[in-house]
Length: 333
Ligand code: NAD
Image (cartoon, rainbow, N blue to C red; front, side, top):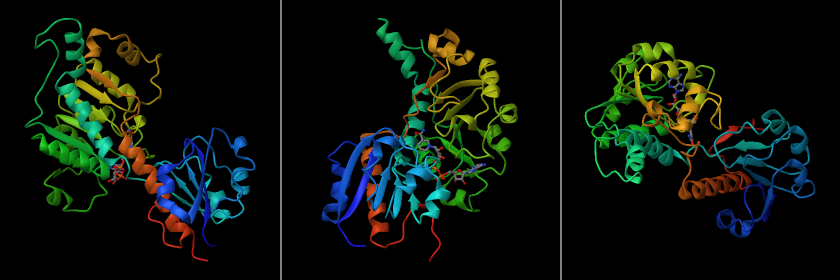
């Protein structure tokens, strides 16, 4: 196949797709459709050599069957559950993603939630806005010397660990998949069990993917082992935290405060009693629970990086080079 190729961005991006066009130059024509459903794609994607797919369209077997010559679908993001991988494989379409565009941003966000709680930012803002110019009215605590326990020392967990060290925190982790000696290389403490990490931590920050083994990983057993006054930060996925166990530990004061970018149900479920109290600004909840709407990955720079890296990945595959982030490596013919 020779250039110029046809690259289609079916959803989210409105023409001109300046970020992608800068990557492809004269090697491809970029078509940005800004569609919101598969039905809108009919007659507009069949000749695509590559698809840069966001998350509004489901790439079902039917939709994939309309692609005559597509070599690669790159998910502009991390998750690829909107692509039927078996159907893509059957059609010889490689599927890739962009796993690292938000590493800095999510780590910054985990620290922002922690700093927000430690310095009582939302509460002090409320106090000041109410016309009171004083201190000691919102809870604050010192980070220096405290121990941060990281659950899952991957890209984001490691970036969070390094940031926390700059704030004078001791950092420990639990990640059974890290090779021995990783703790030495990074100057961290490794615990071989989650309960040991819980017992050693003043703050715990979750950075594992949601899998069968991590669903409900931080639950009643974890809180029973944890110190009273634990701070919980979750920027990973809501269901990693057992919500009932967390609520009990939070209500009893065993958990001092928590910062969440992800929840078991998103958007936040107003029928959940704790969420209802948080929404209403209940006095025993408002200074202790900081929640953001699954925006940790977002920054203008992250979105630009995500789009650029997705386009670069497509260009690699079209040019016959190996993909860097294939989630569906195709067998050699
Ligand atoms: P990563 O794959 O680099 O790291 C995940 C780490 O978790 C790995 O080191 C792995 O060994 C470890 N792990 C897996 N199962 C474990 C278990 N049972 N116990 C302990 N450790 C375990 O992933 P990443 O790029 O660091 O991202 C981490 C997670 O952050 C993602 O899976 C995603 O759910 C979440 N995330 C959230 C946002 C957001 O906007 N809030 C954005 C991006 C990613």
